[in-house]
Length: 214
Ligand code: SAH
Image (cartoon, rainbow, N blue to C red; front, side, top):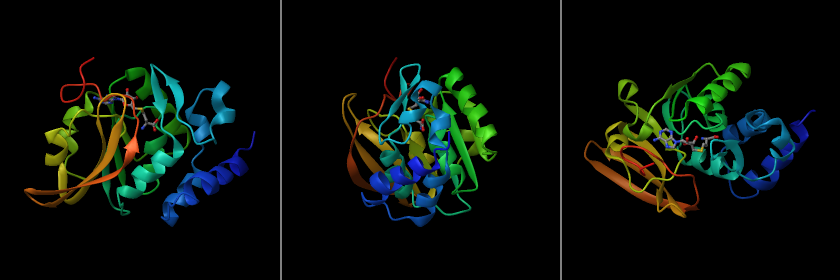
């Protein structure tokens, strides 16, 4: 099955027409085969603008949300980015084509393993995956130019702020378990952070030491 036409249509209808402008990002979303990141029975739905189940009560994010979060990161080619919540690996695949290195943390080993397999298959060798509690970031690889959290947090973990370079951006959904606000926090100086609200959203919970308890 050739999904490239469906994919281009999805990007035009749900990404470009809703205000995403970044040409590199648009191009990447036209290329990354989202259907490979979901089970076979759901592949025909991969180019609709919906979150889809990936097992373990987790979801692959809605394409529009992937686009909004990625654009909000304001990436540059040489950047090193931390992703918390590898899930299917789709967001990591999009990032991997825009920056130098993606460090992605997932707490559920089976998901991490499946993501690794697909990312290897499509040649995303600059994605580094670790199975761990990502609420403490990834201390050995810090600092990062960008941090993207793809699960909803009760508050912003201090480690994320500490692990940003000056000028770095953190994109994170913050709120209660039913509804969050997507925020961008920019480290404008060593001890100074700017916070902006981007849009309301709904993610699965960020579970861990500085997130929700099990
Ligand atoms: N970025 C993913 C979306 C995954 S959904 C994609 O493109 O498919 C969110 C993921 O965050 C789930 O896989 C969940 O297991 C993971 N998660 C939740 N809490 C976490 C934590 N503390 N550390 C790492 N991953 C976490």
